[in-house]
Image (cartoon, rainbow, N blue to C red; front, side):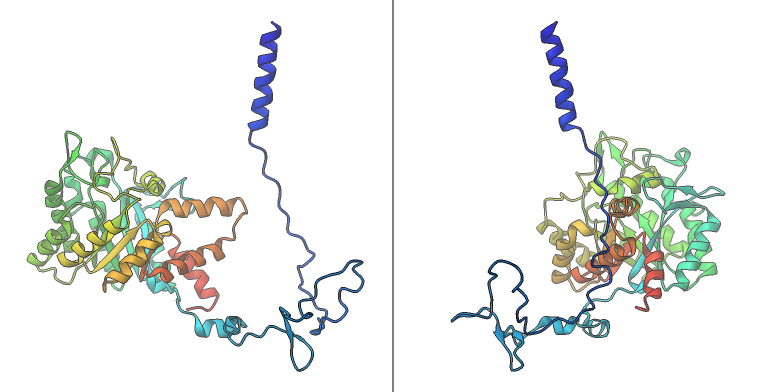
Length: 403
């Protein structure tokens, strides 16, 4: 009995020792809130006299670390001072290397065949839009300078099949939405996702047989999907399936039907990432079995993206995309250096959700961190940014007078 009691006591003590503690509340001190308003003596003479101990003087000795100028002030003998180009907002704006504008954005919108919106819990602020809400969102975004939109449908389970024939139904939700958007907002650039997973009862981007994604059979279906979307009025089709040879086949299919002006934004370097979870919640398109590692790229590989980029460019892609975005800035830069085609970065659902979670906790300033993130994409080499923050970021950019 004594031994049992000792074991219980030890277990409780261990559990307490390793139990997560409540995060400490961090409060901002007001000590430095207003900034120092007292003049600082540039000679720094006598400032340490009352310390009660001997402080090192960088200006003294035979080899002083800091010199004195003609007025006796401390002086670091440095001719090149990069801070001169940062000394004011005006100078910083004048020399800024990368500027993000709403014209750089593609705004992803989730749509469904319901009369009201459905909140996407894992993506705060995002919804599956009903028809009226989709049109309202597009109109508001256009007013803010966002010109491009990509549609992602939540499809009823009743129409999902392994062959995903609903993907090219001319009366399907995407096709009807394209026609509606182009009728009211002809200036809007409508992009479409070319992949079978929203329409598949297997939850995969392609046709499945015995647990294997059939590459060529899938490409056959993707060609039907892309042509049907072009017929509905799509300006850009974006194959996200990562099947081999699909860009060439889709280009040939579009051209043969007279859609030579429909662009292809290829998901060139789409990685088998853990950052897609909230997106799959939005579309209810989690894989029905296994994962997508046999067709999406290994996150450990960088050079492989260059192979994909070279193939897509040769097959007729007009733009190349990297997905996800922030964890793959190095891939964006590699593609930018290797290709003359425009590069797109997808700021994916998991990245969005992480920012939202930190903002909700009060750990990050949403506006500042979002605009910094989007600027990082541009700096890395992205010409185009797909982001769920497109409308909000455009509003912030407008408020700041940056565009």
